[in-house]
Each structure stands twice: as structure tokens, then as C-alpha cells.
Amino acid sequence: MALSHASTSVQIPLSSKGLVVLGLESSCDDTAAAVVRRHPDGQIEVLAEAVSGQNEAHAPYGGVVPEIAARAHSEKIDGLARQVLETAGLKSSQLDGVAATAGPGLIGGVMAALMTAKGIALGAGVPLVAVNHLEGHALSPRLTETLEFPYLLLLVSGGHTQLVIVEGVGQMTRLGSTIDDAAGEAFDKTAKVMGLGFPGGPAVERYAREAKNPERFELPRMLARDKSCDFSFAGLKTAARRAWDSLENPNDADRADLAAAMQAAIARHLSERTRRAMDAFKARFSGEASPRLVVAGGVAANGAVREALQLEAEKAGFQWLAPPLKYCTDNAAMIALAGAERLALGQVDGLEAPARARWPLDADAAQKAPASGSGRKGPKA
Amino acid sequence: MVTRSLTLKDESATRALGTQIAALLDVGDVVRLFGDLGAGKTTLARAVIEALTGEADAPSPTYTLVQTYETDAGHVLAHADLYRLDDEDELEELGLDEALEHGFTLIEWPGNAPSFAPPDRLDLSLTETEVGVREARLEGHGRWEGLIGEF
Image (tube, rainbow over all chains, first blue to last red; front, top):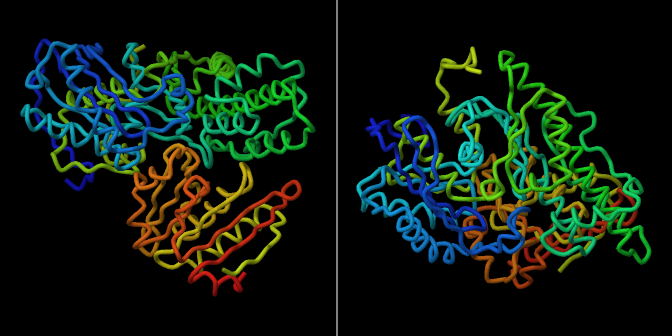
């Protein structure tokens, strides 16, 4: 019991109706609640979901109007929880568990959902599951697809840029992550420098489409000689700002050309690093006949990024998948899903489960990973 | 207030300045980092974080608003980015109290909360004067008035 993520193991009766779990999320800009049913065969059904607060148009690139006030989260979360239970036609006592994001994130925000979840769990006499927000993202493609483990995940949003091998619930290995800015942030900040308006990502994409001379600005290839799967975007952002500053009376044609250059550079960097990760994945799971690359996060909505990654996946012989946009960005269905998966494994948390500002995925994986590599070899497909 | 200007001829000079600042930090100190996008604020902040915690790849706090670390000496180190703050009142949501009282605080985009200016602090402005070359303007307040001469 040395685990700091003090999961206790319990026997969860798997009835024919499966497991119904309420999930709550308030770790960043959005406040959200959802109810999912995990059927006994592992199929996931989203029974109800609700998001509050944010202008959803801003969400894809990480939000530019943060609802950071813990008070605002906590005012909304109760109502959202009630709302989704009502939509699902359930009383809290009919739940099999309550899941909430317990980190990583802004501590006040995280606490809003976590405390509410504890209250509901206690009142209903059902277990609490403290979920790592990143694990929610990692499992999110399973909300809409039957997806076997293992798969390679590229999580690319305003706050995160990482490549993760997902081998199972709580079994994640991070192959690389950004050493400075996230990809969505590079989009947002460049858009701001050029005065393209908000949200930054879609604005860059819109201008890039009008570019007459997309090759005009040469931006550096980041980490060109680096053999890891890490990312770096800060230098790109600086180069774009310099290029912008060098222009006299820049006009929309300049904006379009520089937006195209920036977008292409980000897409290229993402696909180059993902290519490395696909190679690493193939080396590790040489038995996989049809390896899978899942791209989640708001930046996956960018057409150029999508196209570059799809092409790269195709070249490497990977099947390419992306969850629908509403599950790419922060949402509570993925938290409910992660909670249900943990519950199915009998992993629940005590009411003392802490909110955590920092909670790397693979530290958790390292704690959870069984000493023997169970179940990995001889894939099903 | 004591000021001083330095020329940082490349990125490693920016990092070296960060390392030097880290060595002078005391509990309760605040470093405010001013400068445009790409001026090198995060590079400098990362050097401070690496010197105090050994963590070489500190992520940008823009999206998360604040990243906290534990220094090798066991203090809290908060790296905050006010870029996304709309209102100065939101500052209290970042939960910086512990770092302000018992640790160290690095603030990027402090201009979004102008009245947040604790007494013992270093204000540092970075400007790119030509490609790759930066000018750092250091402004010491309180305890830092006596430290500016160290640079």
C-alpha cells in the first residue's frame, strides 16, 4: 500500500447492466459532468453529458478565456451533476461509482469537482474514483470506438503535447512531450502577434488558406538533430515573431503567408516526432499487424495538422483514429469512462484522495504497472 | 530601486543569468519577467527552475497558469504565467500563497496584474535587440536592491 494514489482493491459486482458512473471535470477552463455506462463486454455508452462556462468555439485551442475561478467551477458543478443524472433518468444511489478529475490542474479548480464527487459518493454510498485527467484523454477514443490496447496516442492541445503508448488502464508510457510550449499555444500566441483574433488556431488556419506564397517565410525545423520523441515550439514562435517584426506595414497577404508557414512548420514538427514514436511503437510491439495511432486534443481539429499526421500514419502502416472534437477537448465523459474502467478493475479511492496540481501519467503507470508484463504478446488482431 | 542593464549575446547567456538569479533567491522572493513573446522569459525561467530543482524540461505554464515544483532544498517554487488572466482579481485563484510565504515565485506576463508587486523582488525586462541578442534590464526592489551589484 505504498501507492500515493491510494487505490483500494474491491470486488465490483458486474451485473448485466454493467457499470454506471458519473464523471466530473473542473481541472482547467471547463466545468463538465457526464454519465456513462460501461457494458459488461467493455462497450461504452454515454448516457448524458453537459459542459458549462466556456465559449465552445474557444475550446479547440486551449481556451483563451479561462474560467479559472474555483468559485465559478464549484457553483456550476452541482447543477451539472444533477442535470446529467436527471437526463440519464438516474438517482445518485443507482450509480456504481462517482469519478472526478483529481489532477493535474489548477488546484482550486480540481478541488471543485473532486469535493462534489466525494459528497455524492458519500451520500449515495458508492465508491469514488480519483481520475488522472491525462488518463481520461488517453482513454477517450474508447468513448466512440472499440479500440484494443495497445495504441499510440498523440495528445495535442493548448496545454499538452505528448506521445504516449497506452497499453491498458493505468498502463501508459510517455515516449515524449514538449520541452517548452504546447502546440496549441504556439498557434494561439502566433495568432496574437499577427493580430489574427481569437481563437488563434482556427484563425491561423483561415489565413493560411488564403496564402499566395506559403513558402515565403522559412521557419526553423525544431529539434532536427534530436533523436527523442520530444517536441519544442518556443523557437518556432520566436522565429515567427521575428519574421513578423521584420515586415514594414504588414498586410493580410503577409499574414496569410506567415500563417501558412507557421501552420506547416507545426504540422511538420508534429508528424516528424510522431513518426519517431511510431517507429518506437513498432519496435516494441512487432506482433501488431495493424498498429493504431490515435490523435486527441483540440489541435487535431486543424486540417493541415490532421492531413500531415494521416499521411505519416499511412506511410508507417498505422491506422489513424481521432475521437470526435467534443471528446478531443476537455470533457467529463472521458473522466467517467476512466472511472468506469478503473472501477471494473476494482480500483477505487478513499474519500481522502487528494487534489494534485501535478500528476504525470507515467509516474502513475509506474506505480500501477504489475511487476510482470502480463497480457502483452500475441495480439488479437 | 537599483537598476542595471546587461547584454545577453545568446541563449546560453540568458540561461546563465537564470542560474545566477537562482543562486541569489531567498525564501519569499519574487521574480517578475517582462518582455514580448519570444523575448526569452521562459528560457530564463526554465534556467532558474533547473538550477533549483534539477528539472530541465519545465513546461510552459501558459495554459495551466501555474506550475509548482519542489526545490532540492525542499521549498515550493511556483512558475506562473498571467498571460491568460483577464482580471487582476483572478490572481488569487492561482494559489501562490505558499510559494510567496515559504518559497520562490516566478511570474511571466506580470503586466496583467500590475499591482502584484511584493517588496522583495527582482523585475527583469527582456528585449531582443537583434536576432538572438537580448538586453536584460534588472530592477531590484527591497532585498534585491543590494543584490543587483552581483550581476
